[in-house]
Length: 493
Image (cartoon, rainbow, N blue to C red):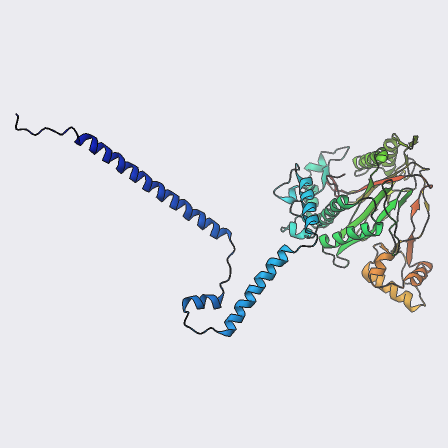
């Protein structure tokens, strides 16, 4: 037994140490491999995110074969590419008013926070994400499927179940989709344009600058195209006691002040399908009740409107709501009065006032009713004055009289101006400022001759008594077979 070798007491610890070291070594190798894989993945992701640059032919050839003589043509191409890349980079960095633009974009972005934007813009008629500030992207680019959002859908007040179950009316509603889509596109332009102008209007701005900004944005959004797409009528910016039909002529430098009440009324159209929509701007909160009264009255008129509804009943409901308000200005309380000789109206293709009037007081249009398929501008005007307007001041709005046929004109300039009006505006309203922009700068005398001949009708500013204040809200609605659509409805009003 003494001849059997015994295990050494020092060998066991040595083997254990070797095993632990081997394990640590393998662990370090695995960690190195893992880190190498992670670095490789990160490099691949960065390469995918970076735009591919066109290789410079002269440099690459020189690296491959330094002994080969340099081609002067390749060298020139290389220099041109470098200069182009440098110019592009500088163009991106050199933006006009960079700080102001960044602040404006940030403000616009913050204004969008908290609002529910649909992934599909066609499902959200209130706001459309993706637009620039100021708006420069045409609405057609925001809706590549050419399907534009519908407005607010409302059921008729005296709801008839047959209207939603009868297949004939459903089919009739679907057939009208091209018409619906045209006017919805015009409404989307109106919403985006007014969203922009509401953010930029400030006291101290000239009215002519305000309307120019607004009209420029409309042209871009709607992609103005003659009589196929563009403005439906001049931008109204009537102040204080002036309720309607005022836009600045060239040279009018009127400035908007903190205590002014301005009615901003503008229209858009696609293929003659007109959206007529207006709102009131007042910076001084003393006028809040006046604006609230008129907005509430307009919404009442929309609620009451419907197929086979008497226009007189709508007027009575509007007046009852509006004249339930009072407004305190300068320590004196004024009742809000509905302006009795201003009305809403029906709308036809290329015709802003189609024949039917929607009163805003009771006792008028007793037997006239609304009919299926009609378009209406439901607009109401409230005043702290008499509640009655008169023509006053220099005229800016004009419109060709569609009921007048051929007119005998002697003056060549009058004939030329009428030809221009027929071609550019046809039966749509226009203003003197637009004629100046068209190049018809010497239009005053020929225009007067057209008015005297009855070919063109003037529409002067409509004003209540001096010292009073007026407000306006307006929406375009459509009496569809199945429902009532408030086409111009937005998040603002």
